[in-house]
Length: 620
Image (cartoon, rainbow, N blue to C red; front, top):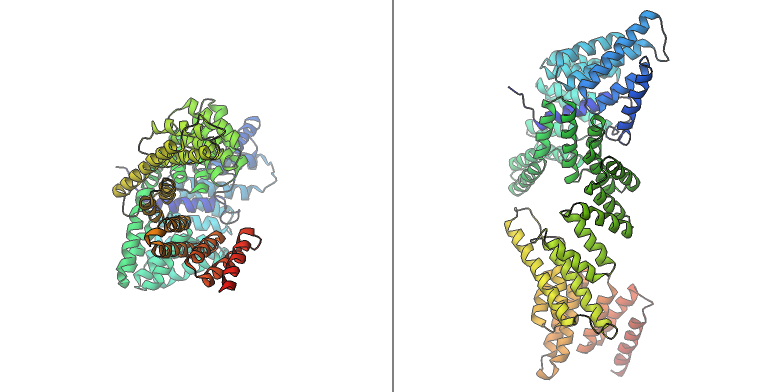
Protein backbone atom coordinates (compact mmCIF):
# COMPACT_ATOMS: atom_id res chain seq x y z
CA UNK A 1 0.00 0.00 0.00
CA UNK A 2 1.34 3.42 -0.95
CA UNK A 3 1.65 5.73 2.02
CA UNK A 4 0.09 9.17 1.42
CA UNK A 5 1.27 12.35 3.10
CA UNK A 6 -0.47 15.67 3.55
CA UNK A 7 0.99 18.64 1.73
CA UNK A 8 1.88 20.28 5.02
CA UNK A 9 3.93 17.26 6.09
CA UNK A 10 5.75 17.20 2.77
CA UNK A 11 6.33 20.96 2.88
CA UNK A 12 7.84 20.73 6.37
CA UNK A 13 10.15 17.91 5.27
CA UNK A 14 11.26 20.05 2.33
CA UNK A 15 11.79 23.04 4.61
CA UNK A 16 13.88 20.99 7.02
CA UNK A 17 15.90 19.57 4.16
CA UNK A 18 16.55 23.01 2.74
CA UNK A 19 17.62 24.39 6.07
CA UNK A 20 20.00 21.64 7.03
CA UNK A 21 21.36 21.01 3.57
CA UNK A 22 22.72 24.52 3.25
CA UNK A 23 23.03 25.31 6.94
CA UNK A 24 25.96 27.65 6.37
CA UNK A 25 24.10 30.18 4.15
CA UNK A 26 21.96 33.07 5.45
CA UNK A 27 18.30 32.48 6.25
CA UNK A 28 15.84 32.98 3.40
CA UNK A 29 18.38 31.98 0.77
CA UNK A 30 17.20 28.46 0.08
CA UNK A 31 15.44 29.31 -3.14
CA UNK A 32 18.10 31.76 -4.26
CA UNK A 33 21.27 29.69 -3.83
CA UNK A 34 22.45 28.57 -7.22
CA UNK A 35 19.11 29.01 -8.92
CA UNK A 36 20.73 30.49 -12.00
CA UNK A 37 23.52 27.98 -12.48
CA UNK A 38 22.79 24.76 -10.64
CA UNK A 39 22.60 22.74 -13.86
CA UNK A 40 25.95 24.14 -15.00
CA UNK A 41 27.48 23.47 -11.58
CA UNK A 42 26.38 19.85 -11.58
CA UNK A 43 27.76 19.43 -15.09
CA UNK A 44 31.06 21.06 -14.07
CA UNK A 45 31.41 18.91 -10.94
CA UNK A 46 30.85 15.76 -12.96
CA UNK A 47 33.45 16.83 -15.53
CA UNK A 48 36.01 17.54 -12.82
CA UNK A 49 35.40 14.18 -11.16
CA UNK A 50 35.62 12.37 -14.49
CA UNK A 51 39.10 13.85 -14.87
CA UNK A 52 40.11 13.21 -11.26
CA UNK A 53 37.83 11.14 -9.04
CA UNK A 54 39.87 11.84 -5.91
CA UNK A 55 38.71 15.49 -5.59
CA UNK A 56 36.99 15.29 -2.23
CA UNK A 57 35.69 18.87 -2.08
CA UNK A 58 34.25 18.63 -5.60
CA UNK A 59 32.42 15.41 -4.77
CA UNK A 60 31.07 17.02 -1.61
CA UNK A 61 29.71 19.96 -3.61
CA UNK A 62 28.15 17.58 -6.13
CA UNK A 63 26.42 15.68 -3.33
CA UNK A 64 25.15 18.94 -1.83
CA UNK A 65 23.83 20.06 -5.21
CA UNK A 66 21.93 16.80 -5.62
CA UNK A 67 20.50 17.18 -2.14
CA UNK A 68 19.51 20.76 -2.87
CA UNK A 69 17.42 19.72 -5.89
CA UNK A 70 15.87 16.74 -4.03
CA UNK A 71 17.74 14.17 -6.15
CA UNK A 72 18.08 11.93 -3.11
CA UNK A 73 19.17 8.71 -4.80
CA UNK A 74 21.96 10.53 -6.65
CA UNK A 75 22.92 12.34 -3.43
CA UNK A 76 23.24 9.05 -1.55
CA UNK A 77 25.49 7.63 -4.25
CA UNK A 78 27.66 10.77 -4.24
CA UNK A 79 27.97 10.81 -0.44
CA UNK A 80 28.82 7.11 -0.32
CA UNK A 81 31.52 7.59 -2.96
CA UNK A 82 32.82 10.54 -0.97
CA UNK A 83 32.98 8.51 2.22
CA UNK A 84 34.80 5.71 0.39
CA UNK A 85 37.33 8.24 -0.95
CA UNK A 86 37.88 9.78 2.49
CA UNK A 87 38.46 6.36 4.01
CA UNK A 88 40.99 5.52 1.30
CA UNK A 89 42.80 8.82 1.89
CA UNK A 90 42.83 8.21 5.63
CA UNK A 91 44.32 4.74 5.20
CA UNK A 92 46.90 6.00 2.70
CA UNK A 93 47.88 8.88 4.98
CA UNK A 94 46.80 11.56 2.47
CA UNK A 95 45.92 15.02 3.73
CA UNK A 96 43.40 17.51 2.36
CA UNK A 97 42.81 21.20 2.78
CA UNK A 98 39.76 20.35 4.95
CA UNK A 99 40.38 17.96 7.85
CA UNK A 100 38.98 14.53 7.10
CA UNK A 101 36.95 14.44 10.32
CA UNK A 102 34.97 17.50 9.24
CA UNK A 103 34.52 16.17 5.71
CA UNK A 104 33.40 12.81 7.06
CA UNK A 105 30.99 14.44 9.51
CA UNK A 106 29.46 16.55 6.75
CA UNK A 107 29.22 13.56 4.43
CA UNK A 108 27.36 11.43 6.98
CA UNK A 109 25.14 14.38 7.81
CA UNK A 110 24.26 14.88 4.14
CA UNK A 111 23.76 11.14 3.74
CA UNK A 112 21.27 11.26 6.59
CA UNK A 113 19.37 14.09 4.92
CA UNK A 114 19.18 12.11 1.69
CA UNK A 115 17.85 9.06 3.54
CA UNK A 116 15.32 11.35 5.26
CA UNK A 117 14.17 12.55 1.86
CA UNK A 118 13.53 8.91 0.92
CA UNK A 119 11.84 8.37 4.33
CA UNK A 120 14.45 5.77 5.26
CA UNK A 121 14.56 7.10 8.79
CA UNK A 122 16.51 4.28 10.45
CA UNK A 123 19.28 4.66 7.86
CA UNK A 124 19.13 8.41 8.44
CA UNK A 125 19.45 7.96 12.22
CA UNK A 126 22.49 5.74 11.75
CA UNK A 127 24.11 8.30 9.44
CA UNK A 128 23.43 11.22 11.80
CA UNK A 129 24.94 9.27 14.71
CA UNK A 130 28.09 8.66 12.68
CA UNK A 131 28.24 12.36 11.85
CA UNK A 132 28.04 13.21 15.56
CA UNK A 133 30.94 10.87 16.40
CA UNK A 134 33.14 12.80 13.99
CA UNK A 135 31.89 16.26 14.99
CA UNK A 136 30.02 16.14 18.32
CA UNK A 137 29.69 19.91 18.74
CA UNK A 138 27.83 20.54 15.47
CA UNK A 139 24.26 21.58 16.33
CA UNK A 140 22.75 20.63 12.98
CA UNK A 141 23.60 16.95 13.15
CA UNK A 142 21.90 16.74 16.55
CA UNK A 143 18.87 18.64 15.20
CA UNK A 144 18.64 16.42 12.13
CA UNK A 145 18.88 13.33 14.36
CA UNK A 146 16.09 14.74 16.51
CA UNK A 147 13.95 15.32 13.41
CA UNK A 148 14.43 11.69 12.34
CA UNK A 149 13.46 10.50 15.82
CA UNK A 150 10.35 12.67 15.70
CA UNK A 151 9.43 11.23 12.29
CA UNK A 152 9.38 7.77 13.89
CA UNK A 153 7.40 9.05 16.92
CA UNK A 154 10.33 8.61 19.30
CA UNK A 155 9.63 11.93 20.98
CA UNK A 156 11.66 11.40 24.17
CA UNK A 157 14.81 10.73 22.13
CA UNK A 158 13.92 13.60 19.80
CA UNK A 159 13.58 15.94 22.78
CA UNK A 160 17.01 14.99 24.13
CA UNK A 161 18.62 15.51 20.72
CA UNK A 162 16.94 18.88 20.21
CA UNK A 163 18.02 20.02 23.67
CA UNK A 164 21.59 19.15 22.73
CA UNK A 165 21.22 21.07 19.45
CA UNK A 166 19.74 24.14 21.13
CA UNK A 167 22.51 24.13 23.69
CA UNK A 168 25.06 24.23 20.87
CA UNK A 169 23.20 26.90 18.87
CA UNK A 170 20.46 28.76 20.74
CA UNK A 171 20.01 31.28 17.89
CA UNK A 172 18.66 28.92 15.23
CA UNK A 173 14.99 29.51 14.36
CA UNK A 174 14.39 26.06 12.90
CA UNK A 175 15.71 24.20 15.94
CA UNK A 176 13.43 26.20 18.24
CA UNK A 177 10.50 25.62 15.88
CA UNK A 178 11.07 21.86 15.70
CA UNK A 179 11.67 21.60 19.42
CA UNK A 180 8.39 23.41 19.96
CA UNK A 181 6.67 20.87 17.69
CA UNK A 182 8.03 17.98 19.76
CA UNK A 183 6.85 19.60 22.99
CA UNK A 184 3.45 20.01 21.36
CA UNK A 185 3.37 16.30 20.46
CA UNK A 186 4.13 15.49 24.09
CA UNK A 187 1.30 17.74 25.28
CA UNK A 188 3.66 20.27 26.90
CA UNK A 189 1.96 23.36 25.54
CA UNK A 190 3.73 25.99 27.62
CA UNK A 191 7.17 24.81 26.45
CA UNK A 192 5.90 24.49 22.89
CA UNK A 193 4.62 28.08 22.91
CA UNK A 194 7.86 29.34 24.41
CA UNK A 195 10.02 27.83 21.66
CA UNK A 196 7.73 28.95 18.82
CA UNK A 197 7.91 32.45 20.25
CA UNK A 198 11.70 32.22 20.34
CA UNK A 199 11.73 31.10 16.71
CA UNK A 200 9.61 34.12 15.78
CA UNK A 201 11.81 36.46 17.84
CA UNK A 202 14.78 35.24 15.79
CA UNK A 203 12.89 35.35 12.47
CA UNK A 204 9.69 37.48 12.66
CA UNK A 205 8.53 36.36 9.18
CA UNK A 206 8.80 32.62 9.96
CA UNK A 207 5.33 31.57 8.78
CA UNK A 208 5.43 27.95 10.02
CA UNK A 209 6.21 29.09 13.55
CA UNK A 210 3.34 31.59 13.52
CA UNK A 211 1.03 28.82 12.31
CA UNK A 212 2.07 26.37 15.01
CA UNK A 213 1.73 29.11 17.60
CA UNK A 214 -1.80 29.72 16.34
CA UNK A 215 -2.65 26.04 16.76
CA UNK A 216 -1.31 26.09 20.31
CA UNK A 217 -3.32 29.18 21.22
CA UNK A 218 -6.42 27.57 19.71
CA UNK A 219 -5.90 24.48 21.87
CA UNK A 220 -5.85 26.80 24.88
CA UNK A 221 -8.98 28.60 23.57
CA UNK A 222 -7.04 31.88 23.37
CA UNK A 223 -8.92 32.82 20.23
CA UNK A 224 -7.74 36.39 19.76
CA UNK A 225 -4.10 35.27 20.03
CA UNK A 226 -4.78 32.36 17.69
CA UNK A 227 -6.35 34.67 15.11
CA UNK A 228 -3.40 37.06 15.27
CA UNK A 229 -0.93 34.19 14.78
CA UNK A 230 -2.89 32.65 11.91
CA UNK A 231 -3.13 35.98 10.13
CA UNK A 232 0.61 36.55 10.50
CA UNK A 233 1.34 33.05 9.15
CA UNK A 234 -0.79 33.59 6.06
CA UNK A 235 0.61 37.08 5.50
CA UNK A 236 4.12 35.62 5.33
CA UNK A 237 3.25 32.52 3.29
CA UNK A 238 0.03 32.41 1.26
CA UNK A 239 0.68 28.78 0.27
CA UNK A 240 -0.20 27.72 3.84
CA UNK A 241 -3.86 27.35 2.96
CA UNK A 242 -4.57 25.27 6.08
CA UNK A 243 -4.18 28.51 8.01
CA UNK A 244 -7.37 29.85 6.42
CA UNK A 245 -9.41 26.85 7.59
CA UNK A 246 -8.17 27.22 11.16
CA UNK A 247 -8.66 30.97 11.00
CA UNK A 248 -12.28 30.42 9.99
CA UNK A 249 -12.76 28.05 12.94
CA UNK A 250 -11.23 30.57 15.33
CA UNK A 251 -13.54 33.34 14.10
CA UNK A 252 -16.48 30.97 14.51
CA UNK A 253 -15.52 30.36 18.14
CA UNK A 254 -15.49 34.11 18.76
CA UNK A 255 -18.98 34.46 17.27
CA UNK A 256 -17.82 36.40 14.20
CA UNK A 257 -19.72 34.33 11.67
CA UNK A 258 -19.25 36.81 8.82
CA UNK A 259 -15.45 36.67 9.16
CA UNK A 260 -15.61 32.88 9.48
CA UNK A 261 -17.60 32.57 6.24
CA UNK A 262 -15.19 34.90 4.46
CA UNK A 263 -12.12 32.91 5.53
CA UNK A 264 -13.76 29.57 4.73
CA UNK A 265 -14.70 30.76 1.25
CA UNK A 266 -11.13 31.94 0.70
CA UNK A 267 -9.86 28.59 2.00
CA UNK A 268 -11.99 26.67 -0.49
CA UNK A 269 -10.83 28.90 -3.32
CA UNK A 270 -7.13 28.69 -2.42
CA UNK A 271 -7.35 24.98 -1.73
CA UNK A 272 -8.79 24.38 -5.19
CA UNK A 273 -6.05 26.55 -6.69
CA UNK A 274 -3.23 24.74 -4.91
CA UNK A 275 -4.68 21.23 -4.90
CA UNK A 276 -2.64 20.26 -8.01
CA UNK A 277 0.48 21.31 -6.10
CA UNK A 278 -0.39 19.01 -3.20
CA UNK A 279 -0.98 16.11 -5.57
CA UNK A 280 2.31 16.70 -7.37
CA UNK A 281 4.20 16.83 -4.08
CA UNK A 282 2.67 13.50 -3.19
CA UNK A 283 3.66 12.04 -6.56
CA UNK A 284 7.20 13.35 -6.08
CA UNK A 285 7.35 11.62 -2.72
CA UNK A 286 6.34 8.30 -4.27
CA UNK A 287 8.91 8.07 -7.05
CA UNK A 288 12.69 8.19 -7.18
CA UNK A 289 13.18 7.75 -10.93
CA UNK A 290 15.19 10.77 -12.00
CA UNK A 291 13.37 11.69 -15.19
CA UNK A 292 9.98 11.29 -13.58
CA UNK A 293 11.04 13.48 -10.66
CA UNK A 294 12.36 16.09 -13.07
CA UNK A 295 9.04 16.21 -14.91
CA UNK A 296 7.07 16.40 -11.66
CA UNK A 297 9.26 19.25 -10.41
CA UNK A 298 8.70 21.07 -13.70
CA UNK A 299 4.96 20.59 -13.25
CA UNK A 300 5.22 21.98 -9.71
CA UNK A 301 7.05 24.96 -11.16
CA UNK A 302 4.22 25.49 -13.64
CA UNK A 303 1.62 25.48 -10.83
CA UNK A 304 3.62 28.09 -8.92
CA UNK A 305 4.03 30.13 -12.10
CA UNK A 306 0.31 30.01 -12.91
CA UNK A 307 -0.56 31.19 -9.41
CA UNK A 308 1.96 34.03 -9.33
CA UNK A 309 4.60 32.52 -7.02
CA UNK A 310 7.44 33.40 -9.37
CA UNK A 311 10.45 32.86 -7.11
CA UNK A 312 9.14 29.47 -6.06
CA UNK A 313 8.52 28.63 -9.72
CA UNK A 314 12.10 29.46 -10.67
CA UNK A 315 13.49 27.22 -7.96
CA UNK A 316 11.30 24.23 -8.84
CA UNK A 317 12.19 24.58 -12.53
CA UNK A 318 15.88 24.79 -11.63
CA UNK A 319 15.63 21.63 -9.57
CA UNK A 320 14.01 19.92 -12.54
CA UNK A 321 16.85 21.03 -14.82
CA UNK A 322 19.38 19.80 -12.29
CA UNK A 323 17.95 16.32 -12.88
CA UNK A 324 17.28 16.69 -16.62
CA UNK A 325 19.21 19.48 -18.32
CA UNK A 326 17.35 18.91 -21.62
CA UNK A 327 13.90 19.70 -20.20
CA UNK A 328 12.94 22.46 -22.63
CA UNK A 329 9.64 23.56 -20.97
CA UNK A 330 11.54 24.21 -17.74
CA UNK A 331 13.74 26.82 -19.44
CA UNK A 332 10.61 28.40 -20.89
CA UNK A 333 8.95 28.48 -17.46
CA UNK A 334 12.02 30.03 -15.87
CA UNK A 335 12.08 32.66 -18.59
CA UNK A 336 8.46 33.63 -17.97
CA UNK A 337 8.99 33.72 -14.18
CA UNK A 338 12.07 35.93 -14.56
CA UNK A 339 10.09 38.20 -16.88
CA UNK A 340 7.38 38.62 -14.25
CA UNK A 341 10.12 39.35 -11.70
CA UNK A 342 11.49 42.00 -14.10
CA UNK A 343 14.78 40.13 -14.41
CA UNK A 344 14.75 40.52 -18.17
CA UNK A 345 18.33 39.58 -19.19
CA UNK A 346 17.99 36.28 -17.34
CA UNK A 347 14.58 35.75 -18.91
CA UNK A 348 16.00 36.18 -22.41
CA UNK A 349 18.90 33.81 -21.67
CA UNK A 350 16.50 31.14 -20.40
CA UNK A 351 14.30 31.34 -23.52
CA UNK A 352 17.37 31.23 -25.74
CA UNK A 353 18.51 28.04 -23.98
CA UNK A 354 15.11 26.52 -24.72
CA UNK A 355 15.45 27.46 -28.41
CA UNK A 356 18.97 26.08 -28.58
CA UNK A 357 17.59 22.71 -27.51
CA UNK A 358 14.42 22.98 -29.62
CA UNK A 359 14.64 25.67 -32.36
CA UNK A 360 10.95 25.39 -33.30
CA UNK A 361 9.62 25.75 -29.74
CA UNK A 362 6.89 28.34 -30.22
CA UNK A 363 6.36 29.04 -26.51
CA UNK A 364 9.98 30.16 -26.18
CA UNK A 365 9.47 32.71 -28.96
CA UNK A 366 6.32 33.86 -27.18
CA UNK A 367 8.33 34.07 -23.97
CA UNK A 368 10.88 36.27 -25.68
CA UNK A 369 8.03 38.38 -27.01
CA UNK A 370 6.72 38.84 -23.48
CA UNK A 371 10.15 39.80 -22.12
CA UNK A 372 10.61 42.43 -24.83
CA UNK A 373 6.99 43.61 -24.55
CA UNK A 374 7.36 44.31 -20.83
CA UNK A 375 10.53 46.28 -21.57
CA UNK A 376 8.62 48.32 -24.19
CA UNK A 377 10.83 46.99 -26.98
CA UNK A 378 7.74 46.57 -29.10
CA UNK A 379 9.30 45.83 -32.47
CA UNK A 380 11.34 42.95 -31.04
CA UNK A 381 8.26 41.78 -29.16
CA UNK A 382 6.14 41.88 -32.33
CA UNK A 383 8.80 39.97 -34.27
CA UNK A 384 8.97 37.15 -31.73
CA UNK A 385 5.22 36.94 -31.19
CA UNK A 386 4.69 36.64 -34.93
CA UNK A 387 7.30 33.90 -35.09
CA UNK A 388 5.50 32.12 -32.25
CA UNK A 389 2.09 32.16 -33.95
CA UNK A 390 3.62 31.07 -37.25
CA UNK A 391 4.92 27.95 -35.47
CA UNK A 392 1.85 27.43 -33.27
CA UNK A 393 -1.26 29.27 -34.56
CA UNK A 394 -3.21 28.31 -31.45
CA UNK A 395 -1.15 30.44 -29.03
CA UNK A 396 -3.93 32.76 -27.90
CA UNK A 397 -1.86 35.04 -25.67
CA UNK A 398 0.64 35.67 -28.49
CA UNK A 399 -2.22 36.72 -30.80
CA UNK A 400 -3.59 39.02 -28.09
CA UNK A 401 -0.21 40.65 -27.56
CA UNK A 402 0.17 41.23 -31.31
CA UNK A 403 -3.20 43.00 -31.28
CA UNK A 404 -2.23 45.13 -28.26
CA UNK A 405 1.07 46.18 -29.85
CA UNK A 406 -0.62 47.16 -33.11
CA UNK A 407 -3.34 49.01 -31.21
CA UNK A 408 -0.78 50.95 -29.17
CA UNK A 409 1.08 51.82 -32.38
CA UNK A 410 -2.20 53.20 -33.81
CA UNK A 411 -2.12 50.63 -36.60
CA UNK A 412 -5.83 50.15 -36.16
CA UNK A 413 -6.69 48.31 -39.35
CA UNK A 414 -3.94 45.74 -38.72
CA UNK A 415 -5.06 45.43 -35.10
CA UNK A 416 -8.65 44.80 -36.22
CA UNK A 417 -7.45 42.02 -38.52
CA UNK A 418 -5.37 40.54 -35.70
CA UNK A 419 -8.29 40.52 -33.25
CA UNK A 420 -10.67 39.07 -35.83
CA UNK A 421 -8.22 36.24 -36.42
CA UNK A 422 -7.93 35.74 -32.65
CA UNK A 423 -11.69 35.36 -32.35
CA UNK A 424 -11.46 32.18 -34.39
CA UNK A 425 -9.42 30.74 -31.49
CA UNK A 426 -11.56 32.17 -28.68
CA UNK A 427 -14.99 33.22 -29.95
CA UNK A 428 -16.29 33.75 -26.41
CA UNK A 429 -13.42 35.87 -25.14
CA UNK A 430 -14.87 39.15 -23.86
CA UNK A 431 -11.51 40.94 -23.77
CA UNK A 432 -10.95 40.35 -27.48
CA UNK A 433 -14.29 42.00 -28.27
CA UNK A 434 -13.40 44.87 -25.93
CA UNK A 435 -10.11 45.46 -27.74
CA UNK A 436 -11.76 45.07 -31.13
CA UNK A 437 -14.32 47.70 -30.14
CA UNK A 438 -11.51 49.96 -28.97
CA UNK A 439 -9.81 49.62 -32.36
CA UNK A 440 -13.00 50.59 -34.19
CA UNK A 441 -13.54 53.52 -31.81
CA UNK A 442 -10.04 54.85 -32.47
CA UNK A 443 -10.53 54.34 -36.21
CA UNK A 444 -13.74 56.36 -36.05
CA UNK A 445 -11.92 59.25 -34.36
CA UNK A 446 -9.08 59.05 -36.88
CA UNK A 447 -11.51 59.11 -39.83
CA UNK A 448 -13.39 62.04 -38.32
CA UNK A 449 -10.12 63.90 -37.81
CA UNK A 450 -8.57 63.08 -41.20
CA UNK A 451 -11.66 62.83 -43.41
CA UNK A 452 -10.32 65.27 -45.98
CA UNK A 453 -7.06 63.35 -46.26
CA UNK A 454 -8.70 59.92 -46.43
CA UNK A 455 -11.74 60.22 -48.73
CA UNK A 456 -12.00 56.46 -49.27
CA UNK A 457 -11.91 55.52 -45.58
CA UNK A 458 -14.89 53.83 -43.89
CA UNK A 459 -17.46 56.28 -42.59
CA UNK A 460 -17.41 57.40 -39.00
CA UNK A 461 -20.94 56.05 -38.59
CA UNK A 462 -19.99 52.59 -39.84
CA UNK A 463 -16.97 52.42 -37.54
CA UNK A 464 -18.98 53.69 -34.57
CA UNK A 465 -21.62 51.04 -35.16
CA UNK A 466 -18.94 48.35 -35.48
CA UNK A 467 -17.40 49.54 -32.21
CA UNK A 468 -20.76 49.39 -30.45
CA UNK A 469 -21.44 45.86 -31.69
CA UNK A 470 -18.06 44.64 -30.43
CA UNK A 471 -18.25 46.47 -27.10
CA UNK A 472 -21.79 45.30 -26.36
CA UNK A 473 -20.69 41.75 -27.15
CA UNK A 474 -17.87 42.19 -24.62
CA UNK A 475 -20.40 43.25 -21.99
CA UNK A 476 -22.72 40.34 -22.82
CA UNK A 477 -19.92 37.77 -22.53
CA UNK A 478 -18.56 39.35 -19.33
CA UNK A 479 -21.94 39.30 -17.60
CA UNK A 480 -22.58 35.75 -18.77
CA UNK A 481 -19.20 34.72 -17.35
CA UNK A 482 -19.98 36.34 -14.00
CA UNK A 483 -23.27 34.47 -13.76
CA UNK A 484 -21.48 31.17 -14.30
CA UNK A 485 -18.49 32.01 -12.06
CA UNK A 486 -17.98 31.22 -8.40
CA UNK A 487 -19.15 33.54 -5.65
CA UNK A 488 -15.79 35.25 -5.12
CA UNK A 489 -15.23 36.00 -8.81
CA UNK A 490 -14.99 39.66 -9.76
CA UNK A 491 -15.87 41.43 -12.97
CA UNK A 492 -13.19 41.64 -15.68
CA UNK A 493 -10.79 44.53 -15.18
CA UNK A 494 -11.66 46.01 -18.57
CA UNK A 495 -15.46 46.02 -18.12
CA UNK A 496 -15.73 49.52 -16.63
CA UNK A 497 -13.73 50.82 -19.58
CA UNK A 498 -16.02 48.91 -21.95
CA UNK A 499 -19.07 50.65 -20.53
CA UNK A 500 -17.28 53.99 -20.78
CA UNK A 501 -16.47 53.42 -24.44
CA UNK A 502 -20.08 52.47 -25.14
CA UNK A 503 -21.09 55.73 -23.49
CA UNK A 504 -18.68 57.64 -25.73
CA UNK A 505 -20.01 55.96 -28.86
CA UNK A 506 -23.64 56.56 -27.93
CA UNK A 507 -22.90 60.18 -26.99
CA UNK A 508 -21.29 60.66 -30.38
CA UNK A 509 -24.48 59.38 -32.00
CA UNK A 510 -26.59 61.79 -29.89
CA UNK A 511 -28.28 59.00 -27.91
CA UNK A 512 -28.41 60.66 -24.49
CA UNK A 513 -30.33 57.94 -22.62
CA UNK A 514 -28.18 55.08 -23.94
CA UNK A 515 -25.00 57.05 -23.22
CA UNK A 516 -26.19 57.90 -19.69
CA UNK A 517 -26.94 54.24 -18.96
CA UNK A 518 -23.50 53.14 -20.15
CA UNK A 519 -21.63 55.89 -18.32
CA UNK A 520 -23.41 55.08 -15.05
CA UNK A 521 -22.62 51.39 -15.49
CA UNK A 522 -18.96 52.32 -15.92
CA UNK A 523 -18.74 54.30 -12.71
CA UNK A 524 -15.33 55.67 -13.67
CA UNK A 525 -14.56 59.32 -12.77
CA UNK A 526 -14.10 60.15 -16.44
CA UNK A 527 -17.51 58.58 -17.19
CA UNK A 528 -19.22 60.94 -14.75
CA UNK A 529 -17.23 63.82 -16.22
CA UNK A 530 -18.34 62.94 -19.75
CA UNK A 531 -21.88 62.57 -18.48
CA UNK A 532 -21.72 66.03 -16.89
CA UNK A 533 -20.58 67.57 -20.15
CA UNK A 534 -23.19 65.64 -22.14
CA UNK A 535 -25.98 66.70 -19.74
CA UNK A 536 -24.86 70.32 -20.01
CA UNK A 537 -24.90 70.06 -23.79
CA UNK A 538 -28.44 68.67 -23.80
CA UNK A 539 -29.46 71.34 -21.34
CA UNK A 540 -28.44 73.97 -23.87
CA UNK A 541 -30.39 72.15 -26.55
CA UNK A 542 -33.52 72.03 -24.41
CA UNK A 543 -33.55 75.74 -23.60
CA UNK A 544 -36.74 76.43 -25.55
CA UNK A 545 -38.58 73.70 -23.66
CA UNK A 546 -37.82 75.29 -20.27
CA UNK A 547 -35.82 72.20 -19.25
CA UNK A 548 -32.45 73.95 -19.05
CA UNK A 549 -32.46 74.45 -15.29
CA UNK A 550 -33.37 70.88 -14.52
CA UNK A 551 -30.72 69.42 -16.85
CA UNK A 552 -28.01 71.76 -15.60
CA UNK A 553 -28.69 70.62 -12.03
CA UNK A 554 -28.26 67.03 -13.21
CA UNK A 555 -25.06 67.97 -15.03
CA UNK A 556 -23.77 69.62 -11.86
CA UNK A 557 -24.41 66.50 -9.79
CA UNK A 558 -22.50 64.39 -12.30
CA UNK A 559 -19.56 66.82 -12.25
CA UNK A 560 -19.50 66.73 -8.46
CA UNK A 561 -19.46 62.93 -8.50
CA UNK A 562 -16.51 62.93 -10.91
CA UNK A 563 -14.67 65.27 -8.52
CA UNK A 564 -15.54 63.10 -5.52
CA UNK A 565 -14.07 60.06 -7.27
CA UNK A 566 -10.97 61.92 -8.48
CA UNK A 567 -10.41 65.21 -6.63
CA UNK A 568 -7.11 65.90 -8.40
CA UNK A 569 -8.37 66.29 -11.96
CA UNK A 570 -8.32 69.98 -12.86
CA UNK A 571 -10.53 69.50 -15.92
CA UNK A 572 -13.37 68.21 -13.72
CA UNK A 573 -13.38 71.46 -11.71
CA UNK A 574 -13.29 73.43 -14.96
CA UNK A 575 -16.39 71.58 -16.18
CA UNK A 576 -18.14 72.29 -12.88
CA UNK A 577 -17.22 75.96 -13.24
CA UNK A 578 -18.70 76.07 -16.77
CA UNK A 579 -21.93 74.48 -15.55
CA UNK A 580 -22.22 76.90 -12.61
CA UNK A 581 -21.48 79.78 -14.99
CA UNK A 582 -24.38 78.71 -17.20
CA UNK A 583 -26.58 78.37 -14.13
CA UNK A 584 -25.76 81.97 -13.22
CA UNK A 585 -24.14 80.93 -9.94
CA UNK A 586 -20.93 82.90 -10.48
CA UNK A 587 -19.65 82.55 -6.92
CA UNK A 588 -19.71 78.73 -7.17
CA UNK A 589 -18.18 79.02 -10.63
CA UNK A 590 -15.34 81.12 -9.19
CA UNK A 591 -14.76 78.60 -6.43
CA UNK A 592 -14.55 75.71 -8.94
CA UNK A 593 -12.26 77.49 -11.42
CA UNK A 594 -9.92 78.56 -8.63
CA UNK A 595 -9.59 74.89 -7.63
CA UNK A 596 -8.77 74.04 -11.23
CA UNK A 597 -6.08 76.74 -11.21
CA UNK A 598 -4.63 75.40 -7.97
CA UNK A 599 -4.03 72.12 -9.78
CA UNK A 600 -2.90 73.67 -13.08
CA UNK A 601 -1.92 77.30 -12.40
CA UNK A 602 -0.44 77.88 -15.87
CA UNK A 603 -3.48 76.72 -17.83
CA UNK A 604 -4.54 79.69 -20.03
CA UNK A 605 -8.09 78.41 -20.51
CA UNK A 606 -8.67 78.34 -16.77
CA UNK A 607 -7.14 81.81 -16.41
CA UNK A 608 -9.46 83.13 -19.13
CA UNK A 609 -12.42 81.44 -17.46
CA UNK A 610 -11.65 83.19 -14.18
CA UNK A 611 -11.58 86.57 -15.99
CA UNK A 612 -14.98 85.86 -17.54
CA UNK A 613 -16.40 84.96 -14.14
CA UNK A 614 -14.95 88.18 -12.65
CA UNK A 615 -16.66 90.08 -15.45
CA UNK A 616 -20.04 88.65 -14.44
CA UNK A 617 -19.41 89.20 -10.74
CA UNK A 618 -18.39 92.80 -11.47
CA UNK A 619 -21.52 93.49 -13.48
CA UNK A 620 -23.59 92.30 -10.55
